[in-house]
Length: 320
Ligand code: SF4
Ligand SMILES: [Zn+2]
Image 1 (tube, helix red, strand yellow):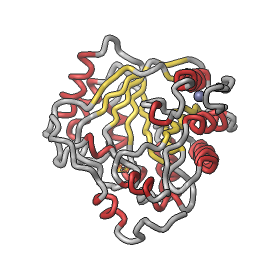
Image 2 (cartoon, rainbow, N blue to C red):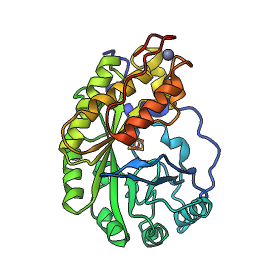
Image 3 (cartoon, rainbow, N blue to C red):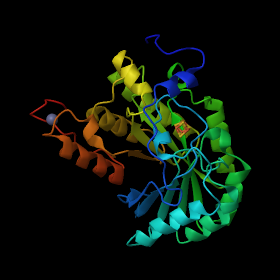
Image 4 (cartoon, rainbow, N blue to C red):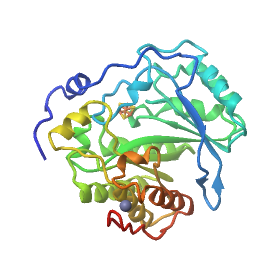
């Protein structure tokens, strides 16, 4: 591991690497909304949609995070979040069984999602059998129970575990340790709320093989904490800090084949937790146009079937 990262005031260094903030965002419009590929459920597939909400920036400054680009510097006005959801729902051709309300931060951060808006939000998504929100483990608590009680369907909370690597996790500046994660997961499960975990494939400071190995170890830890879904996220540059680490040789994005391997090995873990690979924007991890689409299809097929699908053997790049 290199030593270019400052050991003190890492947040200030991360902030200093940022490219300019995009121009002001409309607080009444979501960042994006879309129907997703059906998600494997317990025994059958589930229709799913995501609404990416516009709200105040997350208070943490994680090393690999560029989600601040989709956020505002001030709390959005009361009623703005329900308006965003209404806007998205009015354009969906159908009502999915599962809806993700992802907010580039923590749903339970009151500066991001005003708690006074919870009842209106819950009413709007009353059609969904499951609502998924995201949260930093340290913000999991009473607000989750309040929101759960307002929903017609069930609640799932997605938390970024990122990695269990003992030297990498502290350097991501997440400001939590594995005990925070396991306690938050136990709290949620103890109150009838499902747990989903985000795990990074090849965070900074790891080589390709370690990136796969630690993604699988991290998925195993999440499952041992009772997560019913683990989402494997290939680490993407874009926030300035990762570009600096690329320049100093401490980070490179994972190869597409590494994401495939991480999914394949994580699917072999014991238990009935579901494992998904994040397939958004896969082009940036591909080095070979000849096999990109085949690899994308393979990942989609493994996500849906939750089992091994034969590997792509590409004659053009020679990668399996
Ligand atoms: S807690 Fe999540 S949203 Fe906030 S900075 Fe870290 S990775 Fe980004
Ligand atoms: Zn190829």
